[in-house]
Image 1 (cartoon, one colour):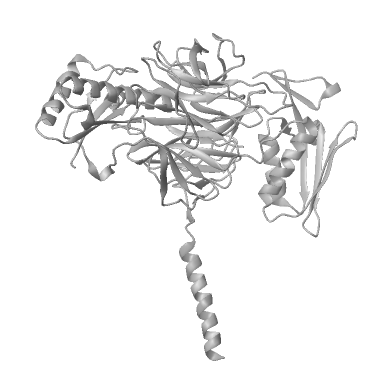
Image 2 (image 1 turned 180 degrees about the horizontal axis):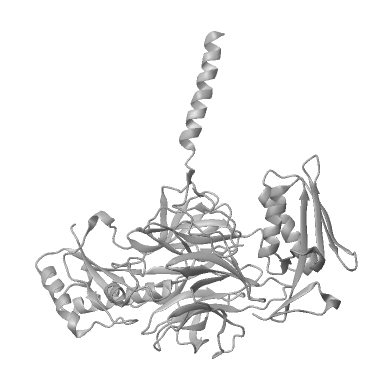
Length: 184
Length: 388
């Protein structure tokens, strides 16, 4: 009888423990209200993190190189800058691309070309523009003799500015391509 | 803009920009404080109806109560004729907000014959520090839930049945198109070609997606079956194509191209062909969203866009599909207004308004021009997509 009760209690405890482990919903309190706008009385609702599936099924079309952010090694090369709403490589920027090409000739490393935009375009249009900037740099590297199989592009649109301020200087620094060599 | 005072004979009607908003005095539900609060807010956000603060100015009066067994009664009466437009009982529910939204849509239907939006949801991109994640909330900003942990996400779009969302994710550094099942949380990769995979939108029948790929050169428009079959290339230009938006009948796709200089909206057949140019001015029109009003709606299909005028983003509408049509600005103020997405009933837009570099979501009733603010989220919310 005694042991039966004990077993029962243990099962209940185990169930409670398991349900705690199984509960992935983490209440999240936003960093703070933005200051109420006109006519707003509602407080910001807390945001719950849903049960985000840890596994993503790769069933879709296409294959691209597999890398992680840990593979990225920045700051080796100077960024190439662009005019507003343009994906044209300016003659004055060409020496930077030649430097990248020379460095790549001495090894077999792969290179990722990131395309970035300033914040003055809409999100998806900027994502397309950033891709064109990266492709323009990729084409120049190809002309300089780098095999296209070593090169990949990523467009971040306006989502990864290097300068988070909002003036002409920041915008001109954010309209850029960055060159990231892969160590593997 | 011009709020016309109307004659005493029909003082119950507020005329805004020449259109009627039906004013309702929501007395609420005896014994149901939350129910009352949610229904009042739903009426305020409904577009079709207005919340009358002065009962004497109302065209309709709502009354209701919560019975001892938890069930709810709701009545709507015309003030002048005393005609009962609605008399309905609802079984009790543990989910008070859901019950309130169902009642609110019934009130809209009873008074206007039109479909309400109170039971819909909105997906959006939630800013958290440097990261941007996919989130879903009720249309009124309640019950926000985060559905990704990918560090950088963009461009959510709903499957027509409301069970899945497709979005752009930098989960493995590169921009891929992922789909998340909202019921299971399970995610799968839709496309991971080299270069850009972005801008996906389901066709109205839910069988295909249109999206942007750069795998064959510069960013071009494609469609693909949701099962990954039947890849089809639609455009072949020297410019960049982005932001595909399906027509309500699924036969055409609006998109953005900068082939002739600044970005403008074009329309192409679902199988490709020669695109027709939809917008000419202002010099920058992007982010088309094509409305799909249901059968029997008083609304017609329209395309909303984000224009740039004087360095500021504003929301505009193209009302007819003839090429070269003007874009009529509907949200043009001192803020940046972007990312319009239509409500399922085709009467309202949700969009992101940015002031001082912080974005929050607003609703727009496109008939009256009224802007309605949604609750703010800590660091910002953008790229809303109105779901079914």
